[in-house]
Length: 86
Image (cartoon, rainbow, N blue to C red; front, side, top):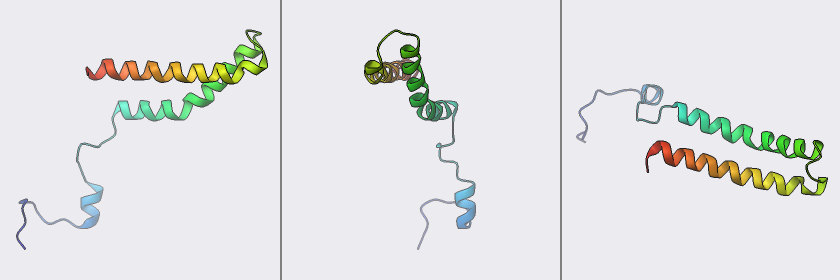
C-alpha cells in the first residue's frame, strides 16, 4: 500500500517517544495544572481563615468558599481571555 506521507519508517517506540505534534507542555499548561491542584485547598484555607479572623460565623464558611471559587474561576477566565486575545 503506498504511503501518503514521504517519511522514513520508524518503530512504534520511536514514533511515540519522539512525537512532535504541537502538544508539548508549555508554561500555560503547567500554570493551569498548578491552579487545578492548588486552588481548592488554598481557597478552603482562605475561607477558614476568614472564620478564624472573626469575619463571619462558621455556618458561612461553605458559602464563602463557593464565592471564592467562582471569583477565582472568573479571574482565570479573564486572564485567559485577555492573554489569548479572543
